[in-house]
Image (cartoon, rainbow, N blue to C red; front, top):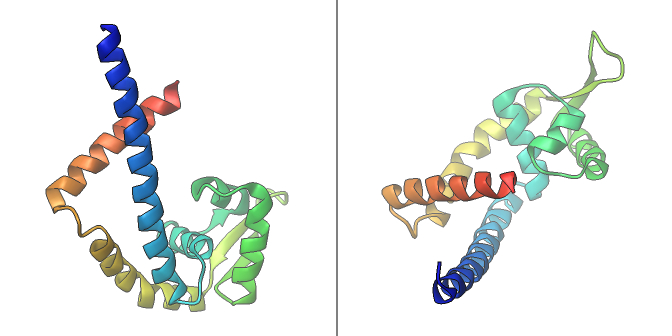
Length: 150
């Protein structure tokens, strides 16, 4: 690559990062607003969504799956337990492992709000056609997997 092409690639890479960051910030702001309508913060919603769709999970795995620091997961689990949306269950085969389990009340909440959340996500992402969303998803996945391997 010539110096001119290298410099152009570097400039485009920086611009891509800025555009991605600003787009994510704008999208996240709308999602936070949407989830707040249900009396939850984004992290609480993410935990409930995970348990609702994937079933009981070891608490330490919950943090990993929703990209939350392990120091924060206990606080979020406590808050959801206080709201009666989840409960802790001991693992029958390993006493060191505690599972987070969605309660009937938590399931009822998610059954009510998840369809509304999907509609809101569609509206928030409405700036792109379905085909464009598929294309962007594919390209961002490729970019993320490449960055992970560096």
